[in-house]
Structure formats: structure tokens, C-alpha cells
Length: 325
Image (tube, rainbow, N blue to C red; front, side, top):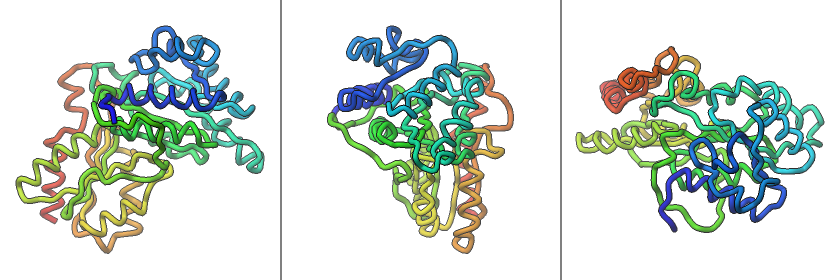
């Protein structure tokens, strides 16, 4: 085991898979010599060469379009968008081509590609570089949507994503790149679609994603000192979603709080809430509550951005509300 941050864990996963499989290659804007806009792919071009770590033009349509074609031809591309906010430029290539080709060819075509993109607010990157758009991808049949919250999960899930024969959108919260954790040196996989209980509890289930997992854990620690046992569940992938794990936790605790960084309206929490309401309503002792961002663009102002994000105070108040029934 080695202590590394999440950016290093992703870099390590890419390196190991490129060593293992010559069909794996990377492409994206400034990922080679510059090592990526946030340094995640640093050193990989020097190690594997320009033919396997391709610096592309500033064209998201070209990046994703090339990845789709390469995957259909038998390679395993890992495409990087600088920020998930730029997905609108190449959305057709992703949701009309990559997501549908296997279905439209009767299962004969495979599209083993990964689309990596950083997401989330918290570094003052303003409205066009700070969004959380995971619910967009969840809505498209044919795409898998993965969102790790720890270095350990990031490495294992990315290796699984690269080996998957379906297109995987791999979302990396930029605030988490510097979070440290213990990670095995060797290659390992974590099944896509399998949630993880980050902290066991008996009074309230808290489902959290991305950097909100850290805030959920901080709140759980605080509430424990007040006699409230909070179970923190990280789905790790949003499509497929581990409904079984979520339902089992709610049936144990009888209360549910959902915390995510996306805009609350039509966010991933709405799907999770609806699933629990449909399949475990009789187990609930309190209304389901969601703690999420307001329906507005991400502010540039530091104070407004902090208010935009779900805070520990807001999460704590939600837990106390459901405990009151």
C-alpha cells in the first residue's frame, strides 16, 4: 500500500493499464507534454510516447468522435475533457453514437471507451468550469456513470472502466484530486455498480457522492457525539446504481438524507429518492430529504460559491430534521 492523492491514483491506474494492454491509449487536450490541466496525466507521454498519449486540437467533438471510432475498431481509448462543462460541444458523439452503437448493431459492436472529465465547484472556476452534470449522463441508456470519492476507489474503478466493453463516463471531482489515501501498488478492480458503506450506522442513511462524501463523513462524526448514528453510503457509480445496497441501508435505519453537489432540481438525488419511495416506503419513519445546490449557475465569488455548495451545517440540519420524524 502506498499513500497517494486521487490524481496520482488515476495516473497510476492509467499507467498500469497501458502497460498491460497495448490497445489502451489516451487522447485529450494538453494531456501529454503539459500533463493535463490539473496535472493528472503528468509523465505518461514521456513513458509511453506521443502515439499512445495524444495531444489533440482544441476540439471536444474531435476528441470524443475519435475515441468512439477507435473503440468500435477494437482499441480501448481513454479520452479526457478538460472540464465536464465542455460536454455540450461533443454530446452527439457521446449519447447518439457511443451510447447507442452496441444496441443498434444487435450487440455485435463493442465500444470500450472511457470519457474522463473533472467536475464540481470549490476552486473559484466560475459558472462554465464548475458544474456537476452527472444526472445528464444517468439519463442515457448505454452509458455507465462512475464517480469515485477516494484514491482507492478511483484507481480500482478506473481500471474496471478501461476493461469494460461499454462506454463509461468517469467523473472526477477536482477538489478531491489532492485528497490522500492508502492505495495498493498492484492492479485491482472494483465492480462498477457496487456501492460502498463508508461508515456504518443505525439511525439515518446518508447517500452522498463526490466531495460530499467527505462532508457527510464529517457530519456523521459530529452527530455520533450527539448520540445519532449515521450510515454513509457512497454509490460510487450512478449508472448502474446499486439499488439493493441503498434499500438495505434504508430498511435498517428507516431514514434517508441524500447529499450531492448537483443542482437539486432533477439531480441524481431525485432518482434515488424516487427509488426508495417506490420500493421501501413502508420502512420510512420520516420524509426523504435532499441537500444539494440551488437552481442557479455556480457563482465565481468565493463567499457565494461556498453558499452554493451543501455545507456541513445544512447537512447536519437535514439529519436532525429526519430524526425528529
